[in-house]
Image (cartoon, rainbow over all chains, first blue to last red; front, side):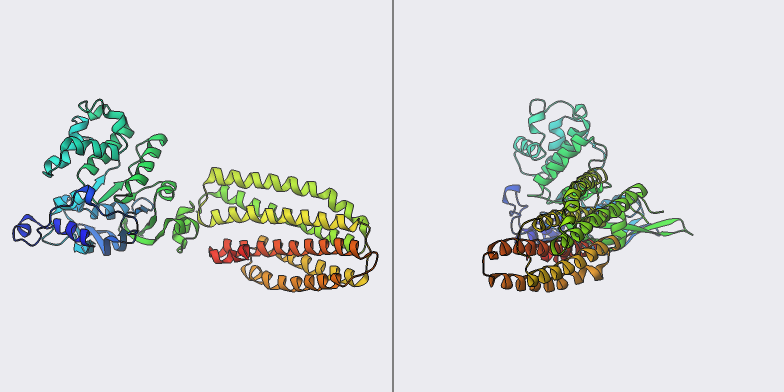
Length: 298
Length: 218
């Protein structure tokens, strides 16, 4: 995919760009290819991924493909490693002392953990929305403008902020008070603001770590509706404890579980099964998946 | 410890009660066939009994809807509840067809011997299928489920013989004979089709393979 090559080229460090290895500019949002007809495009490819915290292996041998324009849900019991896997997709573990990754994650064919890859650019291309809304103690406008400013995106900031707030279905609610503090918004509005902040950085992939767990049902439904709208332009990976939410919003579902080492009192996560959400919730292949999604934990 | 104990108990109770509905349908077919080929006085019990069958069907349907709404079933649980809704509807329709056969037995038409023999044979085959459809459901028996469709072919062949035989009828009583006997034959054939569908739905329930429902589109 030509555009994908351009984007993955963006991941390389400034030195590589200076050597002319990647000259193409970052594509503008409007220039993104449409998703229609491209739903099978591979965006992220995990091969035998293991994540360690020191000597402790938190997740082992995960092989999973994330496809363009789809919502992929990661589900499983607590301690199964789904959030660990999610955070490995944009190198969040780089910020944790002692954390390391084995195996391979490629983004449009480029090794995400390769020595020449710029982790800051990775996190811009692969944004993240967290469990609890975490707006900066700044104005609504400055929250959304933050990403484009620090990334020095050559965009009209006013337009970028409005576009991002519209994409996050928040514009109509805040357009008359952009300069007021983001902390005055409700929890659901704050989470949509965080989505707008992520969108404003022009990512291709949005990772969501239980984005509705702190929200009431009405705010949850708004986020779920928003996800359906966003997936026309973004690839989304969501971790959720709410299986019905996974069933409602996702195209594909990956079920993780944990194997327990009783002597060491440690749990290591592993991927049991990944398939279309329809299959996972009607006739999954693995009895462990069946037991989990139907609420019988065995 | 398995989770969702109460939900599991409610599903088990539904399985048993859907079979109770099946038993009522089976008894209706037994009475209807007996009325058709020998003792028309049995028709009244079949016709009167259909209200009870319908009432149980409605109650079971509401129970299944409540479980769907309140328990948000997925995977095997979802397939079971969807299958139970369709299986109970098949049993209810068997009851309706049995009533139609029973009403035919009350009509004045010439009981021509070969026609009665063919209808009796169809009734016997249909009843065997209904009994095995019940066993398929209550035992969740994939092997039995898979065999129902092939056995239905024998009944279909018998129905074709009946129609061929009726087409050759002549004389002053022929029109009523053809009208009522062909209707009875058609209803017995449809009762067997519902039995086959129960087998298909149980096969889907047990395997999750959508191709198990192919009889639906034949």
